[in-house]
Structures are given as C-alpha cells and as structure tokens.
Image (cartoon, rainbow, N blue to C red; front, side, top):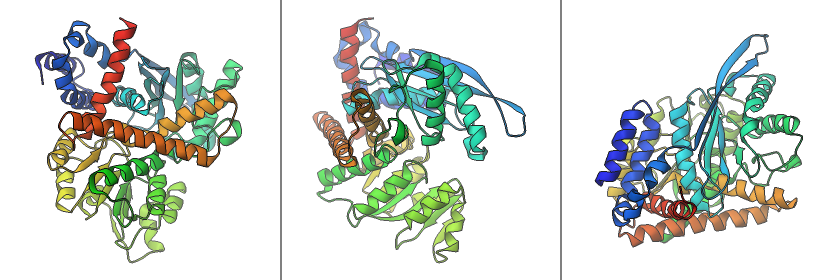
Amino acid sequence: MNKYLSAIFSRLNEKYYYQKEYLQTVLGFFNSIDEIVKSDSQIEELGIIERLVEPDRIITFKVPWQDDQGNIKVNIGYRIQFNNLIGPYKGGIRFDASVNESVLKFLGFEQTFKNALTGLPLGGAKGGSDFNPLDKSDNEIMRFCQSYMVELYNYIGPDRDIPAGDLGVGAKEVGYMFGMYKRLTQTHNGTFTGKGLSFGGSLLRPEATGYGLCYITEKALNTYYNTSLKDKTVIISGTGNVAIPTAKKATTLGAKVIAMSNITGVVYDSNGIDVDLISSLAKENKPLSDYLKTYSHVTFNKDLKSIWKIKTDVALPCATQNEIDEDDADSLLKNGLILLGEGANRPSTNEAIDLLIKNKIVLIPSKAANAGGVATSGLEMSQNAMNLPWSSNEVDEKLKDIMNNIFNEIYETALSHSDPYNLEKGANIYSFLKILDAMKAQGL
C-alpha cells in the first residue's frame, strides 16, 4: 500500500481502534485501489480518500418504547448517511443486538460502492438499532418502530434518504415505520422501499437479493467455467430474507442445496434439503433441529462452522459479516469449492478473501453479489415515481440485466488490471472510479 493510503489508514486505526468492522472493510478497499491512487496525483491533492472514508453525518438518538407489561425500555437508534455524491442516500435499517456505530459505518461504506455498481443514481447509507425483534410481540415491534420513526423522519425523504429493510427488518417493520412516517409528514411518497404491495411496494422485492445472487453466480460460472448452477451442489448459511430466496432460486435453476444453517445449527443432507420446510421453521422461529422430526436421516450439527467443512461446488454465505475466516476458506478449498458468492454483507474476512483469490477460486464480493436488493429498491422507487406497477416478469428481467451488467463491469475491470480472479479488486476499482469522477466534478 502506498504512503498516502498507509498514512490515512494509520490515522483511522488510531482514531477508531475500537471499530474493527469499519477498519476491516476500509483496509480491504485500500488494498484494492492502491494502484489507482498511485497513478492519479489529484486523488491526494484533492484529499479524495480523507473525504471518502468519513460519513457525511452520523445521527444517533434514543428510542424509548413500552413493552407488553407496561415497562419502559430504551434502545439506541442510528442513521449513518455515508455518501450522496451520485444520488440520495439509500440503505437498509437493521434491528439486531449487534448493531453499533462500527457495524453501521462498515455497512454504509460498503453500501456506497454497492449502489455505484448498480448503475442507479443512489448514494450510500445505513441505519438501525440494537433492538432485537426476535423475542418481541407484534405490538412491541410496532411501538418500537413508531418511536424510532418519531426521530428518524426528520432526516429522510424521497430525494434525501430512502431507507429499506435489512437484518431484523422485513415488510412488517417497514410497514409500521412507513405508517408513522405518513402520520408525521402527511405525505405518501417513495421514502421507503420494501413496502407492502398494497401501498407501493414492488413485486419480487422480498426475493430480490437472493435471486440476484443466483443470477450473478450463474453469470460467473458461465464466464469462468462455461457451466451453470444446474447439477451443482450448494451450501447456504442463514435462513432469513436472503438465504431462503437464494435456496429456492438455486433449486429452480437446477442446483442441489445440500446444507443450510442458522444460529441454532447446521442441517446437511447429501440428497438435497427441503427448502420449504426450512422456510417454514424459520418463519415460526423454530430451531433447525426440528427438521429431523420430518427427515430423521439428515445430519444436524450445533457447530455453525461445520457447514464450511462440507464438500460442495458453490458456497453462498447469506447470514452475517465475518462468518468465514481463513480456516473456513481453507476447508472449502480442500473440499473442492469452485465459487463463493457473498450473499451477506462482507461475510468473509480479508484473510479468507485473499486465500481464495490466491488459489484462483471465483469469489463474488458482497457489494456485487447482494446488490439485487438495492437494485430492485431502485426499481420500486421508479414505479412509485410513475405511479405505475410492473409485473413480476418485468422486474425479474430488469433485475437479471442489472446483475449481469454488474458482473460484466467488475470482471472487465479485473481483467484490465491483469487480475482476472480478483473480482474484489474489480468491484472496488470500478465503483471508486465512478465516485471519484463525481467528487472531482462537484468540488469540495
């Protein structure tokens, strides 16, 4: 890494030493754009990187709410508006006990470049709270969402910042937040995406991230190996909003999903997983071990890491960040992996990514692989602006085109830098150059 980037990272590391997720993603990004920075003296002269790595603003607020027993609870709410150089802020809201400033800065930073890859005029943001909806009643979730929106509505709007769902935030939570937003602003507009179909949502939006992951995986398999998902074995971590649609679409495309996991354990069946049953268990918040009540012959393991030791052609991590470390990547290598597509936000550590790339394993980075969600959110915004809904086929074709275009751009960029198996570098360089152009054009 050149002196300019090294000096900036050293300062960030000293200033934000406690924000490991944020520092990790910045370091990976710096390693990718090193040669671009060396070749353009204006980047340092204009302080481009210093301006890029700090969010435009960090909004933090308390969220008081009342549980069903009448007790007052207080959580912390956030909205990190990272960068709006190429369009209004766009990014999901995450409700999970793990939410903190570091996690949201990492997600907002990644979202900025992910959105740039889609070709849509959208900036990057992320928000959420350390509220855990999993053990809450619907009324408790509604009261929390309404309280969260009482503060957040001041900072969002269709031309300013457009939130959506994320981990712990699905159509139900979006509906509660949008309902309160309307009461507070007296408007019905495209401020939220991921809305219900009856009030402005788009067909296929709930499935879009998973479907998009499968489409870009198909494109990569075809490009590198002249093959497809048909007859490939696939393992998928997670049983949530990304994992289930991914499993269903992969199965439709002819793949055999042989293992899935969530926080309760791993289910493995070499003959193929019953995805509908997994989906049903997830919706009812039942442990994966209940799968054995229907299929007693399958293997169940409480060790979440065991999923990466299963022999497979394709791995699609769709759970959370940093779930695959270097040892996991090594296990996947030894078991015949040919492609890893990051359905979750940066589920692989920098060391795992480096190991897979070094061994010429196709790795589709999350900012490209899971861009289908925000891409379809952009399509939802277009439908809202025109007051014109599109059919599921229309949305699906547009989504497939966007994912294919993303792959083409990052692959061609990687090729042009003589590093065809480094799609991480290709994605970072392509999106960075797009934002760099906007920064230079718009001034300080």
